[in-house]
Image 1: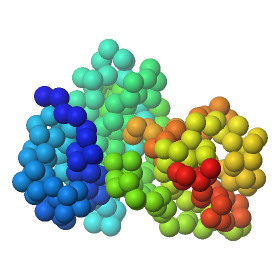
Image 2 (image 1 turned 45 degrees about the vertical axis):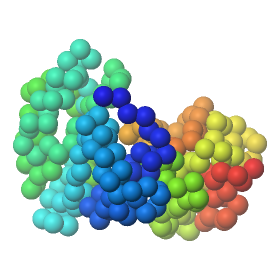
Image 3 (image 1 turned 180 degrees about the horizontal axis):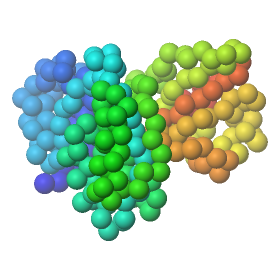
Length: 247
């Protein structure tokens, strides 16, 4: 079943990504300007087409039971990747598996356990099904947000709260608008042309469910979620390079 993502469908997806539990069809209908019945029918169509695949609780296991969350970055043979990813989901403690179109580090597995030994058990089982673990990291926090381009046209760039670091450094996470001055530029060009000011550093790029390591030739694209560090704090002018209509 093929579904076209028109403006109504995009607004539905945006609203449900933002807060599916507390968002009703009449609330979306009021914002979009159609009937609640239309919204309910559209949601059913999106679900039947596999575009909306489910609704999940975002659980903080550390706050709930002081449990560990570990991200395993592994490699599976390309021809076996899909099968191994399905097997990984059946391992006790595994709560999320991401499959990447890549030869190396093509599986990311998020697991939860009571203690280090439980996490070691997960690692052993992942290895036994054919995953070569390249790295593992304890996850401190995880945040989700709606896909900005699917929201109302009048929605402006929204920034997360600053994270203050030692020495006055600050970090902020933001989304690149379609017509932002930096969109389409490599980081090297943005720095060379003064679009990125001295002391402002892009430390990560989140794109299509993957987190990329920024390099000089990394191109910034609309919809990218950037983690940006500034050594002297942020000004309104710094924010404008990531916003539409700021040229």
